[in-house]
Amino acid sequence: MRNLIKTVALLIVSVFVFSACQAAEPEVVPEYETESGTNVNLGGFKLNWGYAKSGSKEDNVFGFIPGTAFADLALQRKKDIENNNNCSIDVTYGDFGSIGNVVQTSAMSGESIFDIATDESFVFVQYMRAGYLAGLSSLIDVLNTDKWGTPSMLQSLMWKDELYGVVPYAWPDLLYTTFGYPIAVNENLIAQYGHEDPREYVEAGTWTWDTFEECLHQYTHPEADYTVYGMATHDAYFAMMMFLSNGVALSEYADGSVVCGAYTDPGFAALERAQQIYLVNCRECFHPDDNTANVVSNFKAGNSILLTTYGYDLLGHSNSIMYVMDNVGILPYPQGPNATPGEYKGYHESMRYSTSIPINAKDRETAAFILNAMYEPFDEYKTKEDIIEYMATQTFFDIRDARVYANMLENNEYGFFLEGARSLIQETVESNSTVAQLREKYESQYQEIVEKYISHHYSAKIALYGDDTNE
Image (cartoon, rainbow, N blue to C red; front, side, top):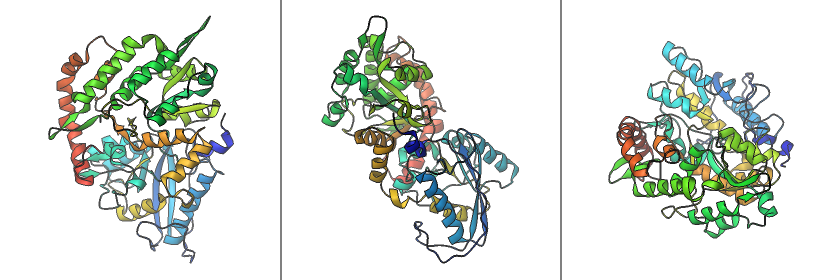
């Protein structure tokens, strides 16, 4: 089992309330630079930051547990900004969803409450479309994707040629619990039954749909009074990841227009294979209980060798898989023939720690300056490789696991779940209808989703990042 004391900094359970510091004008230069490379006298500006949290409100520092390395770095960063720019930063915490609700209420009333707001993108999507958030493209360098997130990570926060939110991508771990769905591997059972470590297939480039099927059968072990199954998974998670595993995006350009990926040839092939594996070829290899909570419990109990899991269940709380099991590997979903080798897709319905500037912030430019300075990379973790190496020693059991996980985070897609775009994919493994029949059934619904929502997200993506639309 991972040392919980060492890894506690990586748990996303945030929340603490900062007290405003007395403004000063010290001569000490901070240990970081903003993108402008300068300090600015902000004249005692008091910034109010609403920050969503999970768990209790007690003793947290921007998502990190006090007394740990990341918490200390974040707290020092806050103090440096206050001291060197003559300002104060007051942070108010609330549950996920509640911060966005305050943004909505204040926008409707005209009262300025938060200058910066951090919550789930699931909440901000609605308020962005309603005009309650300020566009960011003129306030920060949104093209700095290493700092603010890749286009695919931010797509839910794009609307009609503008970006309305970013994520702290350069900060270690804050996004590691907010996406899905990697495969967790009980490496102890792999060794017990004499199987080859499936990480080897990933390294060799042979982690394909065919290899996956073979492993599901090999990993299913009927015992005298119980069965160890090849995989425990929620059916919708399985269908979504199989769909993405063929190099398909949930929405993309094809033949000059925006379409749902399910209506492309690679998407069709992926859904057919998902249906065949889950309902026909390997039905007996999947644990029969596909409840989202129970699949995790069954994996922890040793009732399956593989698990399709959400990041939060993997490492988001003290009872997470990585903190209560002592030898767990991480795999991407196997790649189909249309996938780019070595590029592993992830999926999100909502990005936690999405950060926006409300439309009625007291001073948007000043808020953007402070946001920009606060979310600079920490000196000790300047690069992605620095973060991967840290995660490999403190959270995961093998650097290969950390690399796969980081790869999936970087390439994770917005699922347009709120808009209803998962229906066809999920029903693929829940009904006896063929994929062709399901595509016909949902065609008008998906066309409406494209016209009403997806096309406007894509117009922003093109305006901001160029016309290499499916990157």
